Amino acid sequence: MSEPELWTTAEAAEYLGASSAGSGRKTLSRLGVVPLSREPGRGGQNLYQAAEVRAAKARMPGRGKRALAAGAVLPLLLACRAALVLGPACPGPLCRKQ
Image (cartoon, rainbow, N blue to C red; front, side):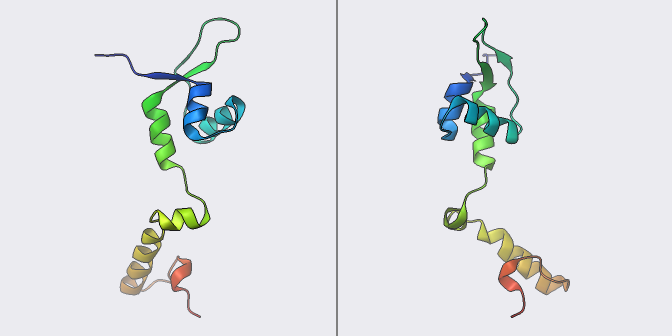
């Protein structure tokens, strides 16, 4: 079995599009990604599994129009349809009564 691909904090931050390693570290923490180990030495960076960082980025929410363009509206439409079939008030903003 091969060892997992490891990324430093700076590499993971670059992949996530963060402006700095510190910002990337905060983003990784917020997404629930924990470091697997640490580089040796006093100035060593945290090491993260690349697959876990990729999965966390895939789970990241979009923003505004980009989220709607990426298909975030589909779950709202399905919830509205379920509300019509089941009868409770719709939780989505798209089907609230005018």
